[in-house]
Length: 184
Image (tube, rainbow, N blue to C red; front, top):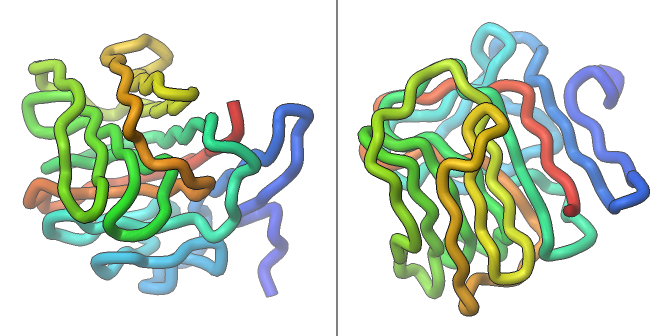
């Protein structure tokens, strides 16, 4: 058995739950007990999480946060397609996602299986970067390396306490590391 603190952890901070995973473990197609692969075959490769080729591939962290006001962030070592973060995950048909896609940063919602683009900034993301996505009430914010790059509001966003990672838009790969999520 691998100690919990080495791979992934969940702790309760004064502001609520904080989840972390540095993915520092042996190469494997099993990504760890803290995660559920919802679409695609994800893997651990060289102490990082590698997303599979395809559209809409995503994983969910199995520990819920305490509130709907939440953030998730990850280091993106490389990407081709649309790597991003998921907030307020209910199921494969209902969640928010912020991404650093080919040619743009974007914020989307998936509601009843239909994807809606809520905001976009046309620019070419460069790697490596730290991507952070926040949902606070109806406010949605996307950050690159600590700087706000995109924000919007939407009154119909899903309300749920799970978070995750996503790669889509036909991307060939994405490499995630140093995941963190928590309540705002």
